[in-house]
View 1 (spheres, rainbow, N blue to C red):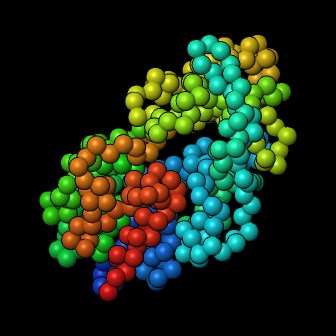
View 2: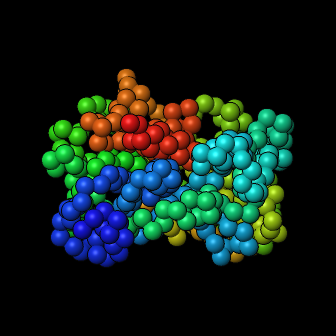
Length: 383
């Protein structure tokens, strides 16, 4: 069976068949994970004519990019939301430079701010002059990938394919799945969240184990969740910060922000978002979704009063800390003496890594993950 036939197999065949071995010598790259890094690695390698297979542990692609539809008349980002760069980055991650892709974005510059500190609600709108970002207007990160990346790589993804071990097999690499199936390939790009590697969910044979892999335990992979709440009326500012004003501009990975999720988007819905991440354990991430939602409403009622329960319609929670293949938010503080690219350096020209943790100056962002994927693909394509 040649690789083209193999890549065309259905997910069911892949996950139920005995060990698969190529009959015809042909260059092939297997990518572990179908999040932003995995999809972009597949995209760039496919564009270069490389035979690609993407193995995704979950039942859907996207990883930490996830879309909420039906909640409002605009789609919402349950995962990554802010673009964290100028709109031209969308073209750059596709390798097209600052091309106008026709994707509408908004200048996200909240105008009204409130701070909840020591039981008092304070206004401080002067921050409208200092903070600005970019967001999607009528789509999401998930929608962006769905439109520009998935058409060329969607058929190459195999779902419910959880990897347990990567090892050499002669001159090739063998990838073992949790159901006993093995896949052979020439090279591998691992794009799973840092948490998966920290917990040892994927093991490596000695000759493919990164030399400094133990240092990965010194990197904080923070916890976090998002929530969206829909109300009949708006009683909240563009942004509500839990804590003193000084905390808003502190250089810290931990954040807790309530924000108007409909700000400058094409909707009249009143949608309040809550974004929470932390380097330290979060009590709320231990709660079930309904208990977490109830806890948020209790907090909001303490801040704004009975208008909260009077106008509340419904809410949705995405607890990333309890997502089985994510187990947290993103990479944060690195207390290792080594940089992350040194810890997850390529091994033997066979094993490569990519993901938001390897985004370097753009770490912990979607485009950082995408750029790291492009770097891994370029290394594979080197003559």
